[in-house]
Image (cartoon, rainbow, N blue to C red; front, top):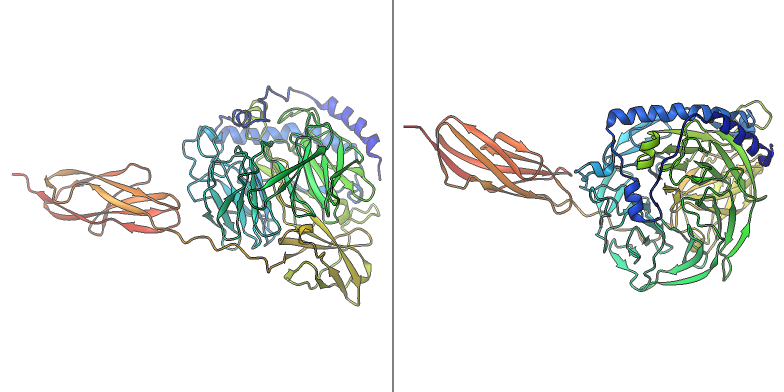
Length: 640
């Protein structure tokens, strides 16, 4: 194993030799919503986007090769990155689903969000890591969920709060649900105010906490699907605050600013303020809950390499220093691995607010909780900075995706509409062969487990198992992991079985879906079994059934008379209470004579033959429901 402290200077020298062009641009103050709105103002079309994606890969190549040369070639020491694969969306928001697939979305198109008048949908895809296939699942509720907050409900569906309302980048009041079984979207209740850059945090009782994104008053989604306001807990926090349930059941705020706090969500809510975590405002740093009541924070601010561990198991949070990263990072991601260690990927090392094409950090680093040390690992091929994400997959690998779509990104030519997958060293043999290691197998495990109980894991490798743990499915955006946490389980070994025990304190791991990993004495993890923790927790109600649209034919008036040949102007009013009208069609009897997909809905019908005609309008909403208007009768007379 190489010493990271020796690698860093050599690598930085190689990076400096590779700099060939300016890679930064003047940026707005991204600590405010207004600054973010200005920063996300991008004007480019699909052709320019394709060129930007190619340019990003090209400019990354030289720096990636330099970073690769500075670490061991043996994947058993450094891990290994897979090839870069094009994606149909920029992976700005990603969530692992209970079926092992990944939901990802960005915004409404290839250009700036604010350059599109139509904010009534969101580009989204479901990626299957097992096959590499992508399934389009665009948001069809009539809203754009760009820059929303999201996390899993106890039933495995995804709850999304906020998004983008208009070309002025205001937040929306809407909440959404994504059903991973049917790949469908539905609307939840409206929040009290629009939110853009909020955090969503699952709570022990199955509720969901919504904080910031503009409004300072938190809100909570109850298990019956309704919302309640924490009217006595208004507090101005940074965008996308770092919020996680602590062992005492309150929600612990660890950053990105310096003050540590806890929120009690009972009743109207109340905050308790503690001391300072450290002196670093970790804007676009990252955090990970790697054990019960223990959080790692690292990087952020001016691309700090500083890392701290916060312990919330006592009455007062305790902060201790751990080893610094080999590289300063900002706009990076911390990802929990299958063995409970933490992986740092991407970011920039120059303190650039959002993106520095010459200052990207290509090497991954792994933090070991047992030693507090970081190990420098293999370099990825594409720089991953602003709007990039990283997510642990059930097979123990890490998906790294996205990057780009912002004002500074556009100025320096940064767009990464692609992804690459990292295979950590723990999946390789440590003999220098570069071969994959044999993995322990989970032959059998229950679909549901509960706190305070034990359960059996069938495995032919029982005698070699050194660690058993649960890791909650991840939901990640803007360097913030909203729900993943690692829970080590005590266990005993039997013949072909392990008996693992889940702690009785439900706050150690809030109810929902988790990956179960077993790890052998060589540090090699199994492929995960995805199971539900505390299935007895009241699930949220099913999404409401779709309401059909309303439609009325406003022109021509019933009884109107025309002279042949006639040009009859047809018009209709149509609306949809829980979605949007996708099409209005006009009919004469059973014959379609026109249609219109945008309001005001109108069409012209050219009539040659004299006679009496029955006219209707038919509206179809985004969920396929159809309503036909009351008919009107008109007469067309022969010209005398």
